Amino acid sequence: PFAAYFSRFNPVRLVGVMAGLVAICVALQSLAASFVMLFAIRFASVMLQACQAPARPILIQQWISLRHIATANGLSFAFHSIIQAVALSTLAVAIGWLGGWRETYIALGAAMGLFVVLWHLVARERTGVGPPARRQPQPSMLIVLQHKPILILAAAQMAPAAMWTALLAFLPTYLEEDRGISLGVAGLSVGLLYWGAATSGFLAGFLDRRIPNRKALIAGPASLFLVGGLGILLVSNSYVVAVFAFVLGIGWIMQPIISTLPYHLPGIKPRELAVVNGFLMMTASIGFALGPILTGIIADLTGSMLTALLSVTLLCVTSVFFGLAYPNPKPPGSPREAGDPAPGRQAIPVVGKAS
Image (cartoon, rainbow, N blue to C red; front, side, top):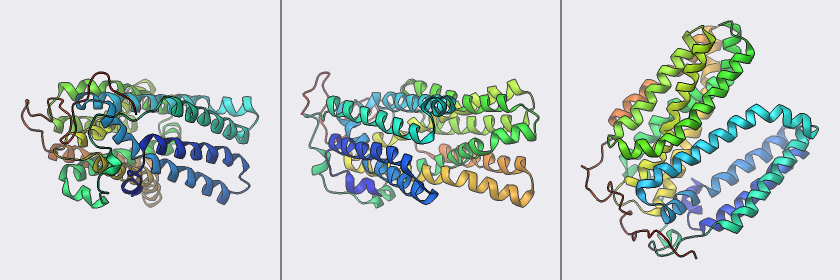
C-alpha cells in the first residue's frame, strides 16, 4: 500500500534516501542483542525497501521504450537471482573470513552504502517524456480493481511463490531423509533452482517480443513449475533431480513477464503503474510467506513431508488456469503492441536530456 503514497516523490531521491536508510538498518543488525531487536531492525529494512518500490516503474517508463521493458525486467531479475545464488554459496565462507555474523552485517551495510553513493552519482530523471508522474493525481490501491488482468497476474504468481519457499525450506532435508540423496547433492539442487531462475531472466525480453500470445507467457512457465516440482519430488536419481531443479528455476521467467504486462494496459498512467507494481509485490510476498507455513501444517497433519510438498506443488495448476484466462492483446499493429509509448507520453528519443 505504500506505493500509492510514495509515488508522489522524485523517484531518484526516493531510492537514494530509502536505500541509504536500508544500508544503515543492515549494519545495525550487527548490534542485535535479542531476537526481538533483530526482527524489529530487519522489519524496518523491509518496510524501507517497500517505500522505494514505486520509483522503479516510473524510471523504467522514462528511460526505456515499451518493447524493451521486458528485457530490462528480465536482466534485473537475472542479476538478482545470480546475487542470491552467489550469496547462498559464499555466505559461510564470508562469515568465517570476516570473523562472525555481526561483522558480516557491518560489511553488507558498507557495501550497500557504496551502491547508494554510486546511485547518487549516476541516476537521473529523464525530461521530455510527458509530465512528471508525481504531479499526477494520487491513485488509490483500488485502481487494481479497474484492471481485471492485474488481478489475474496477482493470482497466477501466488502458487509458484508458495512452492518456491516451501522447497527452499524443506527440500534438502526431504531429499536426504526420504530419497537417500546426499546433503551435498541436495544443496546443489537448491543452487540450481537459482541458476535456472537467473537463466530465465536473460530469456524474458526475447520471448516477450517473439510470443504475442500472453496466455502462453504465463501458463507455459507455470507448467514448468509444476513439471519441475513433481520431478524433484518423485525421482530418486540425483542427476535427474538436479535437471528438474534447473527446469523449475526456468519457470521464473514468469516474474519479469508479469512485471512487464501491466505496461501494455491501454491508458494506464505512470503513478497507477507504481501502485500496480506494489500490489503485485504484495501478493507475491503473501505467496512466499504462506509456502513454508502450509507445508509445515500439512506435514504435521499427514506425517508425510512428501504429501506436504506435493500438495503445495500441485497448487501451481491454478497458475496454469489463470494464465489461460489472461486476455490476449490487440492484433499486431496496435500502438501499444508496436512499441509506441504509453498514452499521454511522448516518444522517447534515442538520446535524451537528463534533468
